[in-house]
Image (cartoon, one colour):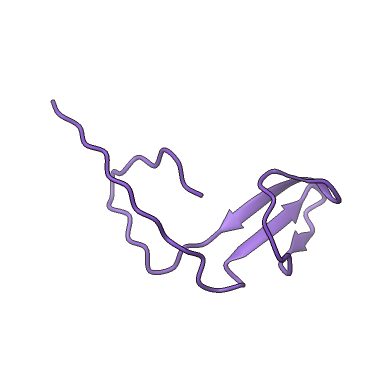
Length: 66
């Protein structure tokens, strides 16, 4: 059984498509940048990123997406 590796890139096209959620549940939607998992000023956080108009076929395994 063969395998193949394909790569693509996609941009966040709207400033409402990225958000940081602080440990206390507060949503921070006006950040000028995204710190993945830890912000020096706010501590641990979860980051949500939405890529519009990006089709990912069923069954695809995403290894790395930033």
